[in-house]
Image 1: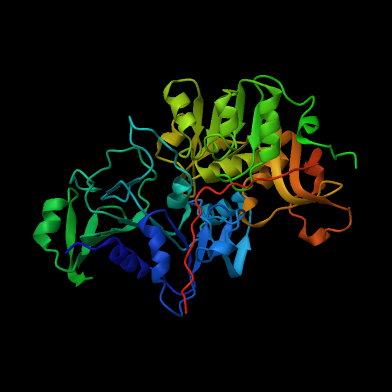
Image 2: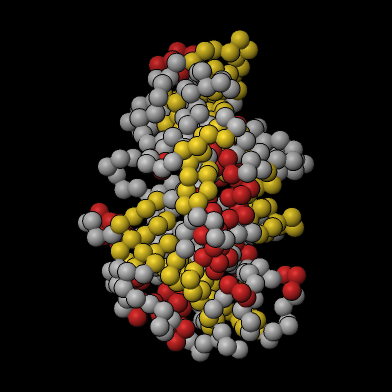
Length: 219
Length: 234
């Protein structure tokens, strides 16, 4: 069985480590916040200018001056800090954020990522995505393995305009998990989702990949 | 008291001209200078290049200047929330320059600090770097981006004293402090003007040297994505 969105978020949460400062993208990555292990100290960064994001507010706590990068209302917590956009991206571009978990339209076997633009369709803009992939120490992509037309999103090379080159470390999809080799020379299949076969991954993956000797099956 | 003006209209007098460049603070609708955007619309000035992270929504924020077709060009990182923007852009009536959000913030910071250009890894190998100078430092490629300044910056802060020292509130700070530094003239609207001496000098976010004109405004503070959780009932 392919992973559900919530299972994908739970799997991505296993990338978190105690003490990490983390930026979560919009969509499935946002759900990772619901799966931070109890007792683990993880600080969420919102690139519009906040460290230490709290949960969504109760109805009577809504504050128009307090939103996340997806423009949703949020709350502050005791460790929260606010700062300007320039300070926020100094954190990101200066390599101070430990981990970025992002969605993508395409990922290539050399670690290239495309997630901001489809030529011929209306382009809304890259927001902070190019800064995050270029500046954050470790970039993990969480996405559906195939697009809505059933085509592989894990590719030999991206067809869409790039967000960054050679920046992705790991790709977690509803079917499997791949590591990008540190030198960008290709992918290694390290996990299958529970109930997914090697044959299914092979049939649905356009990129070339090696199979890790210790390949695991996980939820 | 010489920086304080009675309202947004008088605060913009003598500052606007066709073809001008305007920086407008805010992220989404959070921390936008609502009063000065409306007053800028009412001046009827045309052909404006607007530097702002987003383009407002239909009928509110910068959306008001789009409806009246006063904007010729936007420099932004994300403009997805505005149908009128989409229509004008697809019809070729509006120019658009996308900047990565961090590059935009740093271009404004640099402009305000007198730094004409800088190098960043953001955008290397993408459309953003096309036609720009690349340079290698310690084995990594970086692209040159230029600083930005504007004829006018319009900024929203929470509180100001009578000398223009500013304090922002929560995530409404965003692009406002950098834009305050990068305007040839900077006009600020606040929720409250307090007597000089009543703000703690250690807690000032933007010193008054960057503020030329100041008004106390009234604010709708519209919310784009009201997202709440439910209280568990006992």
